[in-house]
Amino acid sequence: MTKTSRNNLQLAIDGPAGAGKSTVAQMVAHELGMFYLDTGAMYRVISYKVLKNRVLPEDELAVTKIAQETEIAFDHSNRDIVLCDGEIVSNQIRTPEVSRTVSIVAAYAGVREQLVKSQRLEAAKGNVVMDGRDIGTFVLPDADIKIFLTASTEERATRRLQEIKATGIDTTYQEVLKDMKNRDRSDSEREHSPLRPAEDSIIIDTTQLSIEEVVKKIVSLVLNTRNAK
Ligand code: CDP
Image (cartoon, rainbow, N blue to C red; front, side, top):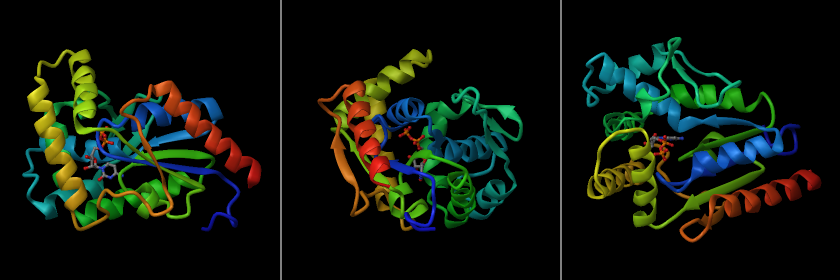
């Protein structure tokens, strides 16, 4: 459906790990009364289930079957709650082990096809903020506004280290940096829907910006677009 033939507003936020996508997307959605869909959490749920069922992440057929059979849900009354087949997995999907596996499973065409189908169905339900890697380029190519959030690799690793430490997991800056670089490489170099800014996206480098500054910038872009629509 094109921009003009639908009456809901779609905001796509893409970018590499640790650029601030999900924090910013949640705050923008809250401020503007839009709903938020964290597509990364969906790939993480598949990665979590692959590990739980002791399936080899390299086994594309078995992983794709899991993606087809898994029910992923979000509790919209509490946006931090993610469910996998009815079980709350909000914390389990954020472990370093899941983070290391997720880019392998997210590279499979069959997995992406399955998740993108539900993402598009969700996006048709109302005014939506969706964040991920391929939202502006593939999932919602006609989104009203496309943002590509980025920051220096070192800054992103520092932010991610703080987040991981806050959950009580012990890790080091070097380890986080290495995992992040590996994930960035595999997300950017994969064949299906690689991470890259959409041609019509607005690129925001958040290295020197606070969360509040980024949110303010995006909210004003959305308001201008909404008024013009
Ligand atoms: O929060 P963080 O940036 O670390 O990652 P995420 O948004 O939770 O996404 C986890 C992983 O899922 C990414 O590294 C990608 O491999 C994959 N992903 C994807 O391929 N396409 C999306 N639309 C969202 C995430």
